[in-house]
Length: 471
Length: 95
Image 1 (cartoon, each protein chain N blue to C red):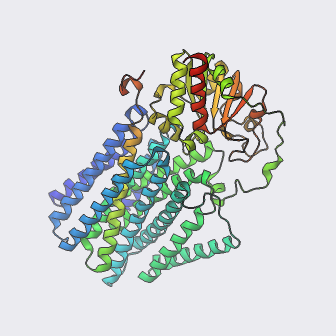
Image 2 (spheres, rainbow over the protein chains, first blue to last red):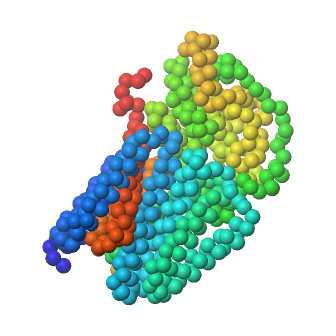
Image 3 (cartoon, rainbow over the protein chains, first blue to last red):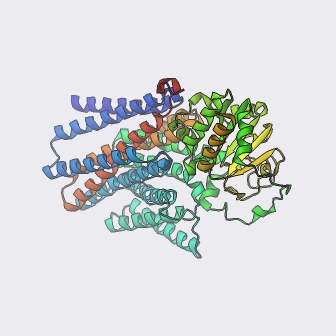
């Protein structure tokens, strides 16, 4: 090992350290940004070191440099452009898109290595062959699966679960072709054609896995596929014998795994159930009988007066707010109330919006102070002191039925909105949430339903407060 | 063997580091992790070294486009999300 090699390895080690520390700094909103910058610095160092290594080795042909340079330039511009211009509400599908291309790149690295080795008529060592097939399978599933997930959130692909007769047979065939082909390649059948068949079957599997899953489950799926990409990248590291790829890939594999579990838990779902596509399509949901009480509809004026004369209001933003992009309207309403001396806080359910933390990002975009955002446990202590809980487009995460066994939301952690003195719900209709069951909170005598789109409803409330109480 | 050891230990570090992150930061965290696996760009650079025919160059090119998009887009979008976590005092005199 010459000096340059040692230096390069030290830089890789430093980069890996930056990744770990960067993730560690994500523990707190205060240090999170620094963490990301540290991680980016590690990345830049690793790429720069690799560049130095390539230049020094002198083995890259002129064409190789042009190919690499133009490819990297195109990818950089595209990534930069998308990242700068995407709307905050479209963030999840963009992350999924970046995840897709990452998985695709990881698979291509292994494919290239395999093509080169077999082209040179060299025997591919078993450990390399095993890593190659794993990389190609995982990377391909991630690539096609993430693209479908992204398309579902963007509305390009239908967000409804797509199930067709014979799907199980098709899946079984795809799986056996993938696994069978992989077994042949791993045990020494050095055939590029066979690897291509495996890749094609894995790509089709990715589509087949994600298509039957409904749009509301996509965050969990994206998170799972993110973990997959990490693992694929680690496998690519095994193939080309590069430690920093192994470390970074494994880190992401583990983090994505944990995150997926946390998301699924917060939605009271198991990852297996989501992948089997069993929820939201079942027939057992109608078994829950609500108390069947009267729904009390309120006007904007009534609701405005109730809010304006409260001393403490807890706002519960939900999916409806995210979908209507009403984060600015809610902040304007909150500002109006605060000017009148009303204490305003936000109760954030872990899966409010489209992903854990998504709601915080949306509200932060509208300059809602971080200190006003309360996570579930903290928020639940505040409802007892609140005069009004203002629920905006949330449903399942506030359904008191979750406290009882025997229904689809049983055991799901919820916000105790019913502990507030009164409740105002802004909602477009009495439609069901994702779990497809009635919400007894809506028929509670202390609940007023204000039927409106989140954005328009909030604007009407703010206008009514200004007119009626001269905000 | 060494790589396998490193792989396993890195997995454990990943579990330990991640499990402490509060739910509020999960979306930015997913995005940050997404950016980190953009390290595959280094892999794409290495395959450009050994490419010597049309297929090889094509694979290297697509891998480079994908990986660069992953890493650059990943970090930029994460930074954009995190830039929003700030206190109102820093934002200025809004109230």
